[in-house]
Amino acid sequence: MSIQVKLGGLSFSADRVVATEEQQVEFVIDTPRVTLAPRSEVSLECAEQLLRLVGKPCRSHECSVCSELQADIVAVIAIDKGALTAIVEQWGSRASFSSPLLDMRHSEENCLTIDATDRVCYLRLFRSGLQRAEALDYTNADDILCYATEWADNNDCTIYIKGNNAAAKLLRRYFKSVICE
Image 1 (cartoon, rainbow, N blue to C red):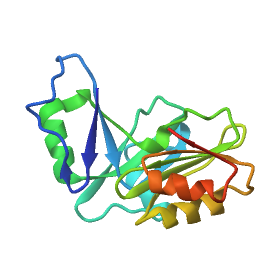
Image 2 (image 1 turned 180 degrees about the vertical axis):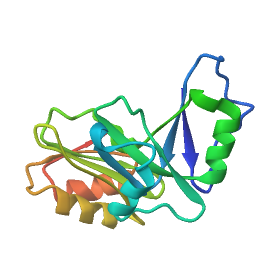
Image 3 (image 1 turned 90 degrees about the horizontal axis):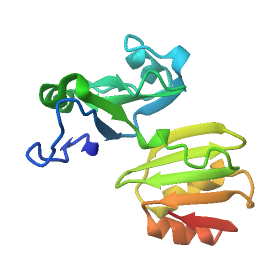
Image 4 (image 1 turned 90 degrees about the vertical axis):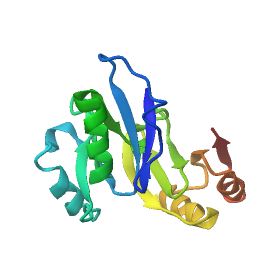
């Protein structure tokens, strides 16, 4: 089960979420304050420090959580303390956390993937594996175009985009291969 959690508040109703006592409940956190790191470099104790080191520190009302620590790549994510408290009270240790930045669908290709939510653009550059990944705030399609031109070092790069049709149309004017997902 996957549930979107927005930093401004929970975007689900506990009445509508049904899970057995054994089921894990995955919360996908939509925030630009997220980074990826190798599993060997991440622990719950150093997560906030890692966010601070990459210039995405937790704000005073936030703390950090990590995605699955058994995976090769771990997402370290800032989350609202109130949202985390509500999640832990309801689901306890069955709750797990994730980020759109962990999406590795096109990892075997040479491409740029862009997932745009209402306010965050998740970019992943693959060149025979993951080369670069970041979550950035954006206001409009022009911001996404700016990120894409900076990240895709040539016009032959295939771009996969999800979540912003206006940006997809704009990208098609500058790149040969833009695929909407």
